[in-house]
Length: 285
Image (cartoon, rainbow, N blue to C red; front, side):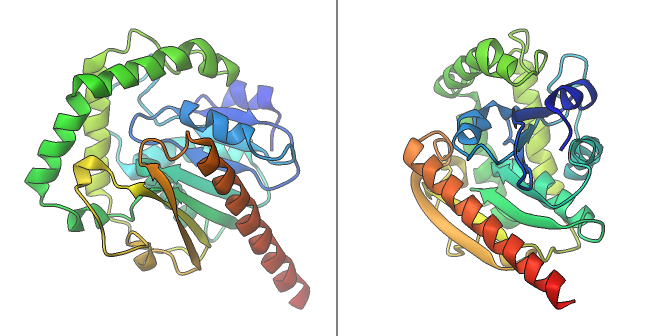
């Protein structure tokens, strides 16, 4: 992995959460809000030998147009920066909620050129899986009501203020969040990103192993429970899928310490298993 200063200088959508370490770097993709600060505390819980990077979705910087990016276009913006920051060796790709889709898309693109050691989904559904959860009009109504509620915006604005004053500075992303980004811009970005989710229809699968973390309390706007414990990923992941349900809501999955401890331990264990398997395969050849 490149040095943190070089990444900050050359990769405007990448934040270095943990710079040092010899293990394959973990690259994390955020949810619909698009900013990486939700991963800050999770990154701090990893061992000192584990590098951790986080991406910022296109459209969030002051100098970027507030336009629609498809999942494929998001990945095309982020992929060169990720590969520049991690120029060799295997990597781990993880995504929270919506973020699992550009993480998956990048895994598809890298399947022939380099080894993706592990894909980690933090309560993220497989492409098109949301259609099985609730009729479209019900999803849109409930999602819009949740997104625009005063309570939701108070939480988002408090997070934005905290991130802009502390977390973002610590991650070297001084422009990532700005208080001039008002409700209208954020609401528009979220609508555009949700539309990108609805339109994403990948035609290929991956052979990498997947680690799936499910929230015990489902997302409100999806209304409900699913009969598929793998969230539809069997269709797109040919490798093993290790699924775990954590006692949290979708929103608190990454913030509660007991959950973070479980997440860190399981990522380390699954990564060790994959690296051991790769080493055995290399010896057998």
